[in-house]
Image (cartoon, rainbow, N blue to C red; front, side, top):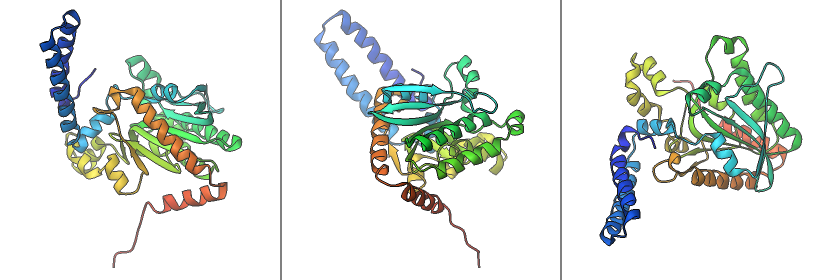
Length: 319
């Protein structure tokens, strides 16, 4: 288990508990067992105290936690069956976008997710979760397939943003993102997006323009990273903590602004502490949303989706 700075008091208690449990396995000392129970209660209270008073920057840290569950951790836990599909039929296969057909409680579902990679080799393979144009074109292919087969779409979003390299721009990065958003907005099937970690700019929006958008409790969703905003606003990337406060990028902020439709509560201590429970909660939210949306015909879905995104901005002329 890797601990963030503000989790160090938790690390100390958990280390002590681990030692006591090993001792308890070797002896049946009643006092030792009693001490373990006391420490377990103290640990739960400490976690509740720390995680009920997190700053926005601390939530950014949790959203980026190296042990946070990624789509390939979640998909096997929510699907009875999953067949991954590859390639954009134009250029190649972008490994940062995971896509395919799965069954969730018997419902055929198109699933598209952004995979960051955990160890160095996989991070490089997945391009650190920053999709290329061919990744977004793969997503577009999946959305078209969902529309053709009449299947709902589930997207799992966790990206710092689309890859900004020269090659990606040469292959039409901006166009791929725009067309992916357009395709999500025009398909006539239920679409549900869940921001599981970072929701970075257009790179995230490309697969999150859905009928229902949810965020895990400690996920973030923003037009720019705190570091990027600090560089622009303060000419100093080290002022990322201050920028995070201004950006209001947390799940609770975005629910208040009606950008998202709900928050999925994480297990105590964060999603990285319990993949099974996190996946179970994601599955329940998906199923609830899908069962509500499948009652609507194509025209109603498109009309309500149009209204949803038109409501998200307002402009006027200053007098």
